[in-house]
Image (cartoon, rainbow, N blue to C red):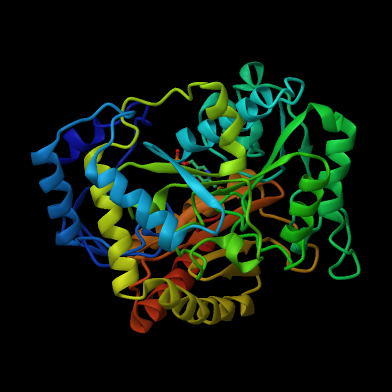
Length: 445
Ligand SMILES: Cc1ncc(COP(=O)(O)O)c(C=O)c1O
C-alpha cells in the first residue's frame, strides 16, 4: 500500500496524517511496510495477550467460518456452547454462571447497564435506574457508556446527549482527590461511593460500575486491597448491583484470571472484552450471577442482541485463545513477567519528569510530570504523551497513550504475556530514549 493510499484510509484524519503502515505482526512485534520492527509494548490497545501470529487461532476461526458463516445470536452453536462451558468451569469467579456475548467492550458495558436496569424493573423496583461510576474511568464510547464514564476528553462535545449520572471520586492514591494518604484515609474514596448512593437516593440507584484496576485513563490505578471488598459491602447493603468492568484487565492481564480475583470479590456483573480473543476476533462478554438474570428470565424479558453477538467464528477464536492461555500457563507468566516489567519501569523514576510508575501483572502506567515535587503536569498544549508515543515508534517501541487531567500525561504498557526478559529490557531502553527525545521537542508544535 503506498503512502498516499494509506493516508486516505481514514475517516476524519488530519490532513498531515501519516499512519503507520503495518504489514504483519509476530509474537510481540509489529513489522511496517518499510521493514521496521516495532516492539508492541501495549499489545495494541492492551489487547494482544497471547501475542500476534498464532496460526492455530486463525485456523480455528477459519474452520468455524467454513462450517457456519453466521448464526442468529439466540441460536445455539457448538463453538458457543463450548466457550460458555470453558468460561464457567475454568475462568469466571464462582457464581458468575450466565454468559452473554457482544462484539466488543463498549457493547458489553452497554448491555450490562441494560441488564442491571432490567433486573430491578423485573424484580419490581422500577425506581432504580441511576448508575454510579467514578471520575477518571472509561467504560466505552457508545452514548450510554460515555454517560456513565468519567473520561472528560472522550465525553467532550457530546454532553447534551449524555444522561446526568452521579460520579464518585477516583481511587487514585498518588494524587488523592480527597487529599488523604493511605492507610490513614481508611479508603475514604470508597466511602464517597456510598455518599454518592445516599445523595442520589438509594432507591433510585441500579448499579455501581468500576474498573477493578484502572486502564489507560489515568494509567493503571491500583486500589488498596481493602477498597473492592468495601465497595462490594456498600453495594450489598444498599441493594445496588456491583459491575466490574474488566474489558482491559480481564483474562489474565493483571496476573490473575480477573482483577477482582486479587481482592476476593465476586461482582454481580463482570464485563470482558479485549483479552477474551486476544485481538483475533472482535468480541466482548457480559457475565452475571443467576440472581441477576433470574427475575429477567422469569418475566421473559428480552435483552436485545447485536447482530454480531456470539458470532460462531469469534467464539471459536476465543475458545482457542483461552486454551493457549491455559496450556502455556500464561496467566502466572503474566504475573511473573509483570514483576520484571514493573522493576524495569521503576528505574525510570530516577528521571526528573517521571512522577509515578504503577501497575499489576502486565498492566503498567507511567505518569509524566513537569515538577516531581508539586506533581504539576506539563502544559496541555505541549502534547507530551503524543510526542513520547511518536518518539517511541521512531525508537522501535509502541506504547499506548493515555491521560486525562489531572493525570495529564500517561503512558500505558501492556505487552503480550509471552514477552521475554530481553524484550522487557528493550521496552525500558527504548522508552527512556523516547522520553528524552520527546522532552527535547517539547516546544515544537
Ligand atoms: C475498561 C474498559 N471498558 C470499556 C472499553 C471499551 O471497549 P471497546 O473499545 O472494545 O468498545 C475499554 C476500552 O479500552 C476499557 O478499557
